Image (cartoon, rainbow, N blue to C red; front, side):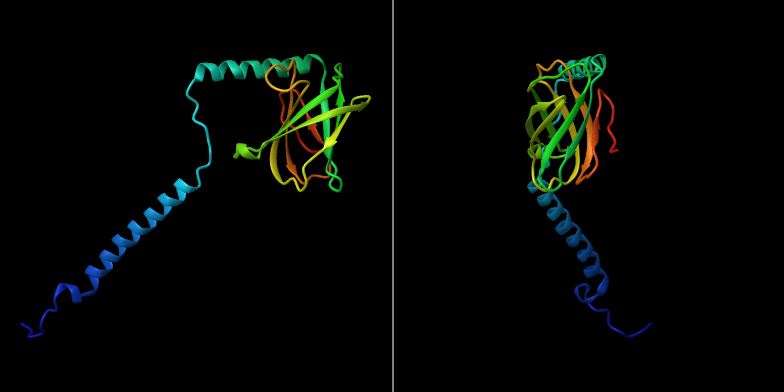
Length: 174
């Protein structure tokens, strides 16, 4: 037997190491909980699936109507002047077009624009400065859910080429 005295527990390494792990995990989990509460992302939980399904069917009907009218559009945003120009092709020429720029994750960044018909299927309006990131695009002849048809697309900005808006299909930059 050795005569070396055993120090008390509070003077040893391992109890403090294990307590340090415990307290650091509590500290980090509390920090992450506070961050998650403060940075609420605004995602909406769908409660009425039946109504949501009916709305999807209405959107599909609008896109099918755009297909029947042979509609398609090319959208360009001028990088210098921020003018939004849409060239609409097909069997419909409304006096105005309504463009919705929808940000995929944050609904407070969504933007709407009214484009005036200037000539032969060309519509124009002033757009936002420094548009960045990926956006969903949709145009329709009237604002809201009363539209007869709808064209949709997706684009990443800034983009110097035109973006195709099609009935029910993903658009790609040309």
